[in-house]
Length: 409
Image (cartoon, rainbow, N blue to C red; front, side, top):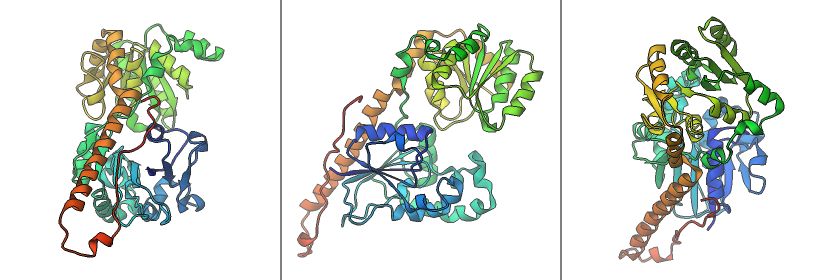
């Protein structure tokens, strides 16, 4: 059966793009539609259709394109293309997509990374606090809520996001956590052996025990708390990443009571080696889900994280990590001490529930069950006596099970 996968923009790096790749691998015959595709290498053998925005000056300008995306998604599917189902991977407006080839509704399943933060939770995204965003948000919220109601079924990437979906869209969502490459992470005994000689020299110069903070260097990631907590706990700190907070973090590091080492933009192998070498991975921000803590857990490193957001679901208290009670150095230092005593193998085992294989099983089960309900409703409508003698002449849409590849699933 012909299927369509709708996704926001496609870039070379991004957590939602990784989820898109997982979904696309489950449905290898489905087309993909996106406002613009800046990473053709991700889907070299697929039909990836771009919206008209790709040929406009708005290409790649995410915030500026927001007012135009609701309209663009409604005309995304040409009338001559006929799809049996649509899966939307949405963190903005891709769930507004409207298949137009059939005379009756096509089932649309939405996997929501979050309702659009720009308009629903501007406190989580400063771009939503701009004057244009504040002026447009009331109208966009009305449109967004109405079009979310078109979905046959909605899944959220965490219970935290499912709560936000309920608040924003007024619907209940199934929770399906995103896939993490647990098997890949656990397939290598020593990731340091796969790093470059220069990276190995850097690793050799790190302390035997240290607290790791790894993420983009931006304010809400709260890497300043990692420095403060390491100082309070008496453990050296390693910060891996890069971004606009670099200078401020280095200034804080210069005043810290413990050594603070910086690793600029680590490669994947180096990041994984840092996870393995760290005593504890400290993850202070409130995230919708948070893949990096699970990567650390997968290689056996316990995590310190918040009781709010995705970390409340992904960190099992006293097994794979410890939650801090308050976002301050004292609370985090206590959590670091408790987490450092946890069992490595128990951490590794906890990561299995977030594996690619677990995602594949949950996602395909959700899709099949959702489409089965649609089929049942359609069948009941067809069996119901119809007083309209012309009804039998109108075309009907038949829905069946989704064809998928089981490779890796």
